[in-house]
Image (cartoon, rainbow, N blue to C red):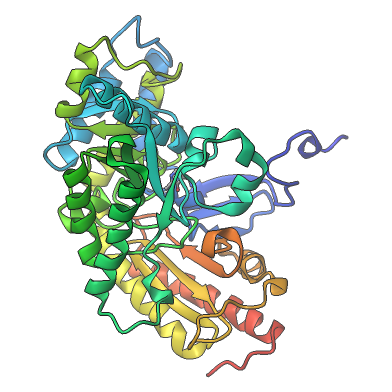
Length: 448
Ligand code: PMP
């Protein structure tokens, strides 16, 4: 028999076993081996796998209608999900537009910003400033905002080359500033860049409030967030928060923006919003932005599957589950437990140079020298090696090269928000065992 996998390709050939079923924080392969889903896939499965209450609600919608095109019918799932989303979101964000994924959400946010600028008689505004490193998606528009070299390089000639400022990776800084001063220093990079581009040309600034795949749960100093908002306001630049990974409770608030009391002009969401029950994403914006665009002839944008009733019924069931089970509060609480456990690893493994995160979006990074934060030898391929050692032991973690994808190794731990303290303990036993094996492989002493 031909192996069907040979017809299917992703970024590379796929050597993994076949998935059989999921249950809570666990996934099982067809050989019956159990894995803790320590990264919720790619930070997606926020409410855990196969939740019966959620499945029942999706099935009820399936029995009625799986698709009705939005230009032909209003649907209750889409309108109820929009209302629920607005209710869970801070004031000032009260208009919702649905999409099917994160790249679509980011591009939709930027295009909404552009049409808003046109309604304000500002046709020059088209430059989109983002950060390096960052990840905003793989479609060409979102990719142009992404600061991650290996993904950009093949397509560089096909993109405008949108401007980037350095992400606030203060853990690499060896200056004498306080964290607060560092936050302000990095925020000023935005002002410098706006002035360089000419404020009349700058449309938006796009940032992940807590970094994801490209930076490994990078959290800026508190001072950064407010200053960025002020600078955007000063120059009439719209602030877009890419909450594709951080939204839907992942960091212990519905939106990460709430940690700093920031209201972005537009928010992009996906991943945990559909939580793996349906491909789903959204942009949320204020009426101040959306109404002028509707008045001017409408948003010249949209995807066929946008707001389909099946995906929206899944999204609605996911948000109801989050609320009913107190999962956002649990993410905040369990995030502290997990961070304490990860910090303790730094005493045992000298090659763990930094631990960071917010809520249940956490990460650690490997270094060869704590005083300089030099990465490990790239030839060790640590970012792949530790993932394999953990996978073999039944724990899924998510890793990338850090520093824009060119060097270094970071690892994201972001389990479903339903996780318990005992399950975090279970996850740590496997993680320490994998780290011990990695330490042995690279000949590094481990404190016992
Ligand atoms: N923005 C962020 C912050 C992300 O983490 C991702 C996915 N990793 C995306 C955008 C793109 O989402 P998608 O892969 O669903 O297109």
